[in-house]
Image (tube, rainbow, N blue to C red; front, side, top):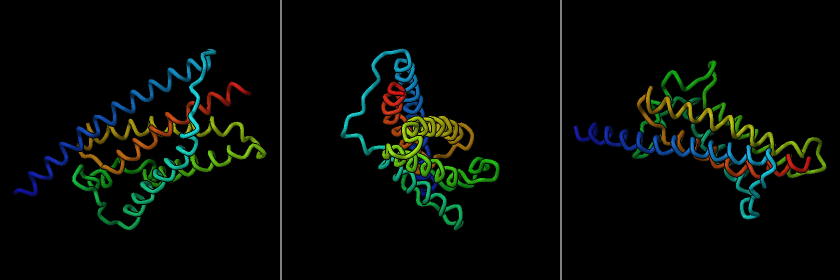
Length: 191
């Protein structure tokens, strides 16, 4: 009895956390949209501080770790370690855990891998199309945030369970979006 009360409370706390992250993603999306609009209309682009130069690869590695763990849970058919918030296993076993038969975690691995590889490619100006890599990183992050908004919506309103790992991934990709807008705009101004 006590365990079921604790589980219900944990799921309620997870729903509130999902709401907070959903709202933060929407705000970040709006902020980024305004910055991009301003950048393409001649207003000075936000400059990335040198302290954040390696934020994208570090965040991509964190995202790869989360996606790899969830891919392991999926492929090994084991229970996910969720901690005190949410119910990852309910989310992982829902019909929304796959897109066209492909596990969301595998899509996450590919997305974070793309972001990391394109960021690394863009660091080498001698490589072909290196100047376009910030745009690809930004577009991959933008798509990922939009997809994460959809998935978080499903967790809150359809599945009615929260995966803490999914929320971590949503937060990571939102941070990548925020950090990638500045370099993308700077590169677009110079071309």
